[in-house]
Length: 397
Image (cartoon, rainbow, N blue to C red; front, side):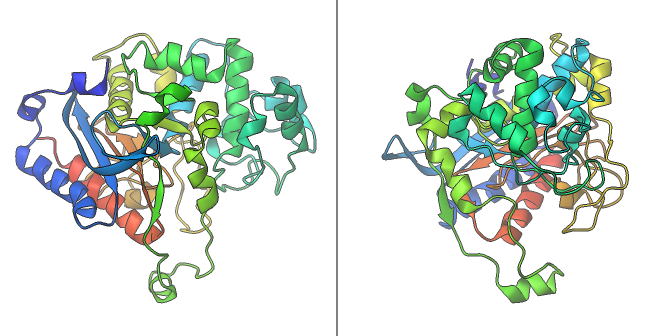
């Protein structure tokens, strides 16, 4: 099934307020109308159906510029982490993996260079201590090369002592763990155990080359924020993004799309991402349990485990569960990627290019937003995300 098949004719049947929905759609389309972003796509869902799915703008697909549609696939970058984490949650629920296990007990090669004590939980919390460890995507398919990379990684600080976001490194190790414990390629495991049972045919981590013509190529837009704006907000002027522009644009390369970088290589529609989160909500409250995840294991996976660890740039608690972020009740949810109206129990993960994916167990809303324009102004990018998530969270009656 395509995500559009989950689309309902009248959003009011899902308890969605039309005036609020119109405000969301107007805000989401504005940056495309004004020429800042080439294309954008969103979906908002509730009660197991999509209340609205819209796409605006144009995208280069297969070397040809085309109007973007609801079937256009977009890179979602680190929104992918929630999907890979959800694969880990399956293994935990089936008793095939324990978050407290040492990674080296599963992947012996990983334990070199002082990494023997790192646990699966620390990989998922970004506390394992090697945020910049390299894994060139073209090395992943060759087993000997990937294992050599794991062995070569070195610690920047003792595991568990601090939080520093790992853009890709820790999730490469999680992909290896999925393969060791499931006996299946991690991309196939996600497709067979998550995408196919949920009828989400376009939820891709690793995309066959014949489907690449459907993907919206990424483009850089805008300029970095001026130094005076950074100073006004109390942010470091020399701050460097966790992922370089060159690395982000790498998703335009066919080989990278096929590999499916587990920390940020997902390619899908906003509808598929929103419905993935609807499935998690259905398993949490028992309203639509397909048996993919055990309810008790899912509840444990979504428990905040990062204690008092803080974000080194923002100085706020990171509120990390196993692979995802939780909004929290300390008034800092907007800095964690949520809107002003989300409940404290909301969970999800954003993407480096401005992508959004979250679910709110209180309202039942799930929301996803994608764009093929990487806005160099990360402040504007962050403000856009807060506004969109705020409008989306307010849509429930």
